[in-house]
Length: 521
Image (cartoon, rainbow, N blue to C red; front, side, top):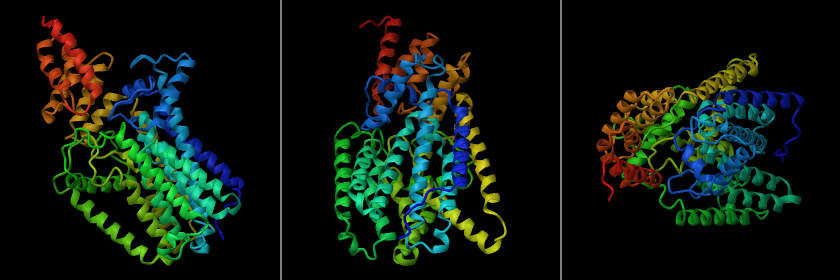
């Protein structure tokens, strides 16, 4: 059995240290950048152990606990935590936590990859270079700018926490198979990681299936063997599924029950077609990370943009199915294809997600199979056509280029106006991007009120449902004492479906505007 991982060489440790340092440097530019989108509202609510449907903390107590811990640490350190632009250092602790989480997840990813590449079904010439291959994939994963949203957009640490526990389940499963003496301890660790992961984000629901497919691809000789895998693994499967289904059911009954469909009017077919475009777009960004954006809006794709993605995904799906019919030779490829689809399935299939047709953070774990295939493909080409070329001359420039691109993306968070101007150019039909641009202009120093009003008006022209701009535009009008214009917008926002927090804020501002107009009743 070749799954045992020996201690890393000294050179490997130095390379790991260099990659970690490069990762930290890539994210330092955003360390004290202003909060974005719902960061402030979510963190403020978490500081009081509160949440509402639609918040990233709804039904995710591990995420809320981590945000509350950051808040309490800032409080102990006497950091000014007033809303932006006051308290300029309050963001540092939150993003430092996210960077540390990213590095820990990368270390765990390396361990999972190293053991996977040393499974007995992997050809000897490839398993012999498992350490550098796993290192390259991990470095690319850590440094790729498509990951930046999970770190720089603070409350999206839910993706980071869920990914950490997802990988912990796989790692514990790997260790249990290779360590008879401590097998049940590793099974217990997998079960605990499953509980914590499900309390972080629902993507962990698919982890039990991925564990079973891993065993079929690398260890078991038939599908029937999954029913009697031996080594007590049948009990592991059962426990993981019970935890996943039980926790998911409890979350749906509780705080997350109204979240996935909150305010959504699109059909499952329309959402599925939109995901054909979105997933193809993620793959494009993985290959060439230009045009990253913080928000894609909530309008489904209806034109032909989804057709190339549909063809691509159909081909990938067919290739994955074919690989499963040749497990002895292509089991590793079958597993990678399945992992890509399974990890994306909870957010990128046919269940409409509230107010969000796409999000780059969804690829945080799903990009791993893509990076593995790219790395293996480049190494195969190097061996065949340029065996004298040292791999380090290929990897080092790519890693540095990714780090520089990620640093530039992180730096963009320091300029909210520029960040949202970029978003409006990337997705010009996204009303929420214009709303956020207007808000950034409104709260800038000094406020750029005419430009902000123009952005709000454009957002409302695209979206008459009050999903974007009503509250913010009304706040601007109230500031200019244009209460008669603000009141209709506030009334619409107060009665809108989909944002209890905004509705409460609109109701309060509406009462003040009515009193200013002399309507005290």
